Structure formats: C-alpha cells, structure tokens
Length: 191
Length: 245
Image (cartoon, rainbow over all chains, first blue to last red; front, side):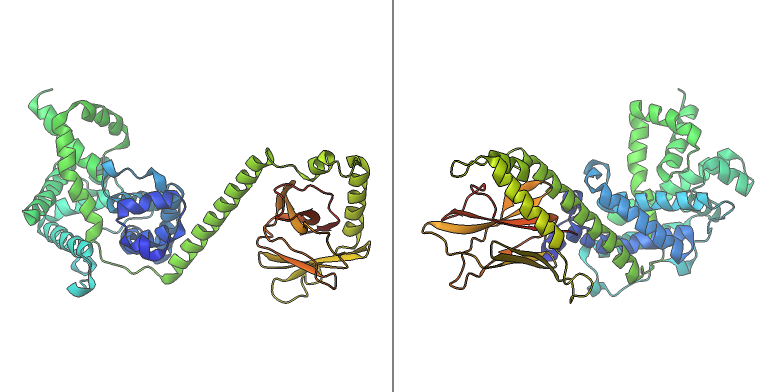
C-alpha cells in the first residue's frame, strides 16, 4: 500500500494491513502512536535507552501479531499503550531493586503545541491530557500516589500498602476514590 | 453477597482496571465479573480514566534512529515473509510443472528416447559445471556477476546478473527454421519455469533475452520451441548454464 493511502486510513482500518505485513501501514501506525508510546515507556522506565528497547520490542510484537487487535476491546491507541505499559512494567520488574519514579510534577505534563499543528484527534487527546492532568493535580496527594505507583510503577495494592506503610484497605479506598475522581473530570469535560 | 462485600468487590474492580490488583485475586474477581452486571458497568465506567493516564505524561520525542531500526526490522520481516510465500507457491506449482529430471524423462523427441538425450544434457551440465565461473563475483562492479559456459557445438552462452535481473547472451546459434523460436527457462528448487521474453538469433548468430528475476535460480536453459513459445519445454535444452551462488 502506498504511504498516502495508508495516511488516509483510520487506525482500525490500518490494523488489517499490518496483519498482512504491510510496512507502509506499520510506518503510519508508528508515526501516529510512537511518540505517546515512547513518552509512556520513558515515564515508567526513566531512561531513554531502556524506553527505546521497550518500544522496539513492543512495536515488533504488534507488527508480528497485528491481526490480533480486537476493536471490541477499545481503541488502537489504548491497546497499543497497554502493550507498551505491560512491556515496560515487565522490564522494570526484571531490574531487581529498581525503584519506580514516583513523581507527577508539573514539569512532567504534556508540552502544548500550537493548535494549528494538531489534527482533530491530537487536539482531543491533548484536551483529555489536560483534563487528566487537572484531575490528578486536584487529587489528594495520597490518592495520586497510589494511582501512579499502580499504573506507572506496576505495583499491586499489597505492595503499595507495604511501601507506604498503610493498611491494605486504605490503599484500596484511595485507589478507587482517585480513579472515580479522574473519571468524573473526564465525564464533565465531555458534557 | 451483602452491600459491604460488594463495596469490597468494587474496590477490587478499580484496582483491576489500573492493573494494581494482587495476582492471586485476579481469577476470583474475573469469575465474579462474569456474572455481576454492576461490577461490569463499574469496569466500563473506569476504563476511560485508566486509558487517559498515559496521555497525560510529559511528551518525549523518540530518537529518529529508533524508527530507522524498527522499520529495518519490519522491512526485513516483510521480505522474509514474501520469500516464504513465493517458495510455498513454487512448491504448489511443483505438482503441475515438471522439474528438470521429470522434464527429461518425459521427453520423446524425434523418436529418440529420453535416456540418450538426458545423457547429453547431463554432459552439458557437467561441462558447464566444470567451467562456469563468476567473473564479476567480488571483483566486478556493484552487484554484477557473469556466468559463462565453454562453447559446445559452437554455441557459447553467458548469463550476466545485476541485482535481481539477468541477461542471457548466446553466440554461434544457428538460424531457426520457420515457425520456431528460442525460449529460455529457469530452474528454481528443482522446478522449471518459462522466461516470458522469447527471442531469436540475429544474422551473426547472436541471441539475447532478459530474465526479470534471478532470485533462487540454479540454472538457465534454452530450447527451441514453436513460435509463440510453450508453457512446458517440448525439446531438449541445447544450452544449460548453471548458476552457482
């Protein structure tokens, strides 16, 4: 398939082409999601070299199993980022004694680009990012922390309870409350 | 299950959604989820929040070399896949097309049986195999290679390959009787396939044709065929150039 044609296809339409081993379709797919995927891997692993290894492995696994995407289970974007997140967490766990980054400071937010450089889809994602960032900043620190430890650190509730030296029930409550608040912010943004 | 128990389940759903549920609790929750609509709805409700989390991290530009490495691996994969597909197609065609051995066994030209003809062809192969050499291999320019055989019955042949393309050149070829043409054949994996471009000698006895793909070709042969060419060889090859890689 020619690159121009691939660029006109939606993500869900690209995936069958990737399943048929079309390099042009895969290149467009990478151009769309490689940046977000690399950012996520870097956020989890904290090193550019490790993030590059993670993206190489995750995207090759997608290339080799491109036909396995199931649209019923979410968007191509979320599917891709969940694969990257799982790969990065596995890499993190394989490094014995490696502590995850625990910050979610203001300087880690998405850098805004001028609106005229963004596609509609990118603009929507940027808006979502702003809402999530806003929601996270408004969360009590202890709720934000357990969410970050679980999602970006790959720790279970029991592990987080041990790390923070708080009862397991407290971690469970904070995690649910925090997620509910973020979800509420997103719902308000859509309303 | 009472209300308190169910609240505990909802907390587990939140942890499950974000990937923070302890592993030993996952099977139990998944079993519960399968039969609990309220928990299924809670999971559906929370999922967008989890999916939005990676969008909120600071954007880092990946290095261009990462894409180059990735695409190099992808293109190599795609090329290997294409080769596998072509090989499978050739194997499938093997059932309908004879290999060189079957070809020779199946021939009966001018009342002669295949055996002496096969012996002749084998002799050509042996001679050719003894003197075939790569002129351009290593010392040639770019990826050009030349495969030549010693003249036999006054006919000399050489195949010049560059990249995937090949040119077959013959000299000393007798003029063809009316209604006959020269047809080249390539052998891949023991299967003989026709070269589409038919050809004929000029007044000086020189004849050339182009072979579009030399991929995995192990021999190039030439026969005299009825005008218009043949799908299968109908005569013995009078030239066989082995391609040794």
